[in-house]
Image 1: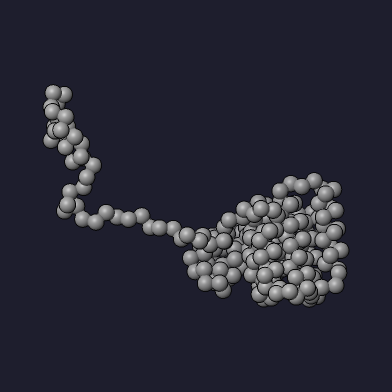
Image 2: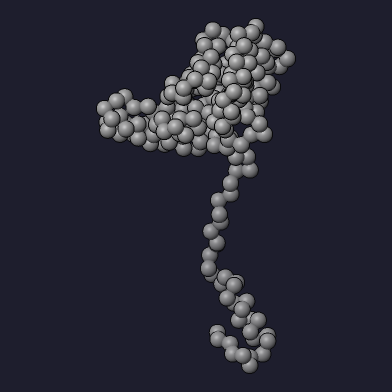
Length: 219
């Protein structure tokens, strides 16, 4: 219905209303899918301080001092990795890695294999950055997962993924993504599992192409 400047005001109002109100037989409008009120903690790396999410496992220690010390040992290692990625000065990072290494040698509930895995991470952080750092982080995360410390496992796996992606280590990033997917599956986060498995597959293909071009085993 057209209106003209000399139309009565009520006619112009009725016309405008007809333009914005759907007719009765238009059918139900399509609703936008609601997002979960509690987002899955698989992609958000934001923390109040480096390694904060690792300390969530302290709740599982249930007053066991040795178990709590294991969580703290894992925390100081993850903190060193994340601070290294954030660009902390070499001398400060050297001090932090030294303090973390001394803590790992202390008396707590770390088994020999997990201690060795965390020590390998520290060597990778304080030394020359090599693809083995991502592998060491995934290995350490696996020990945390088997121990039931899922927050620490998640943090180590995500750190491995972030480090590998930042340095272009496609094979290492693929392994880290596959580890995150496994942890997501173990905790019932199926949507996150599918997403991370797709990432792992894409990165594995990228690593294979890189290896083919360079005649090497990939990184």
